[in-house]
Amino acid sequence: MTRRFRLSFFFVTTFCEHISKTSRRGLTKPRGFPAMAAALVPIVAFAMNASSSSDSREQKTSPPRDSPFVRPDELETWKKKKNNNNTSTSSSSSSSSSKRRTLENVSVAVKDNIDVAGFKTGCGNPQFLRDFSPRVKRKSAPLIERLIDDAGGTLVGKTHMDELAWSLQGENHHYGTPKNGRAPDRIPGGSWSGSASAVSQGLAELAVGTDTAGSVRVPASFCGICSIRLTHDFDERMCREGIVPLAKSFDVPGFFGKNVDILLKATRAVFANDDGDDDDDDDVEEKEENSNSSNSKIDDDDDVTFVKLEDAFALATEEARTAIESFLQKNDIEYENITLGNENILEWWDDFRIQQTDDVWKAHGEWIRKRHPFFGPGVNERFYGAEMVSKDTENVARARDSNQKRAEIILNEVFRTNTSDSHHRTGKIICVVPAAACAPPLLNEDASIVNDLRVKTLSLSCISGLTGLPQVVVPCVSNKNELPIGVGFIGWERKCDVALLETLVEKLNIDSSVV
Picture: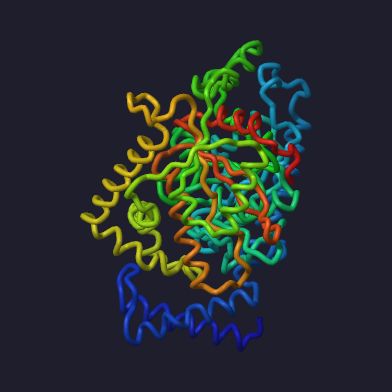
């Protein structure tokens, strides 16, 4: 960057910050002349990106802007330290943990909102990285300890994400857009774009991250890989500790996997031994299989019913509907078509969004008011409105109440089995929905088209968000142009995660090497 450019950049930036601070408090949208100053911000940001100055401050080695991985220098340092520790440690590991290392030699990527010892946590925003993680973390999140330290997964890096996980497109203004390994000219989906990119390109077999309103399900659909959104709050420590939140009412960990078998291994690992007690060697396998009664494998004589939620399919494109129906037919899945009566799930997103936005502001509002971080297009507008949404406490309370009622509607109409109503189903119910409303949109697609598809996709994804039920996504392919499309399977009750995966492995003709 030339000296003249640096000076110009400094004066423009200072002017914009001065105008913004004197014209508003918090993030209420500026009007009049201050709006002109605000309009200059994207120009300044573009210049900053063009010079790669924001990246160079965070990374000694800058990867390509389509790379899924962040701060590769941290990984090299971590590897050296790990090797030194292994050399100094006794070669004979404890026999009590040997049988639990179900992810031995499985390559694992971690979303950059989860703490890993030896790495910083950046959440896709340079200002957040500087303010909250100036030094590497000294302790990993319990979720990572379970998967890496206990189960034996091999860390291959932390991955890019949308800023503070508040987007579904996968396009990060600061760090670029990770490559969609199955459709390079298409967006990877967000917020968990880097991990989806890594798994779809074969750079990692398993990825660990979080899902609020579709972050693990939409990228899986767009990138043609498998994923699971786990049961909401199945374990307080693994769901919260060492994880930067977006919206606590809906946040939950999840996995990307190159196939369902990998997802099953990871899910068994996190559900095993939930009480935290150490097990004797002879009891480990039994504990893993029976850690939750609902997670035990379905018996052959158990009744499993698939239901196709027509209300959800109505929001998907014809291309997506046809692909999913062909997939079900190919796998000999007989299903019952059901609807939710007068309920319009397209309208559910409004109340889900209000509750989510309130949670977001409670998590990050104080930092945003004090530091005025720069966010990229789309994310910036959502944070601009977050404070005002949160201030309308009456509307937030109404939205939370509406969401609770809708969760009950879904559970009663789709999954409830303990009823005398002859129209209700018995046994294990698996609800089939599109994981996203469409095939992955093109890079730089028209904003109005993307926004329409975004609203429909979020209306689909909020079903699991409202109920807290686990959801698995497996890939199929569009008959029209062979683009990836995800099929969503929602489990019948909380903590049925393992049983849901086992059932899908048994019922579906899934290639064990999808990627």
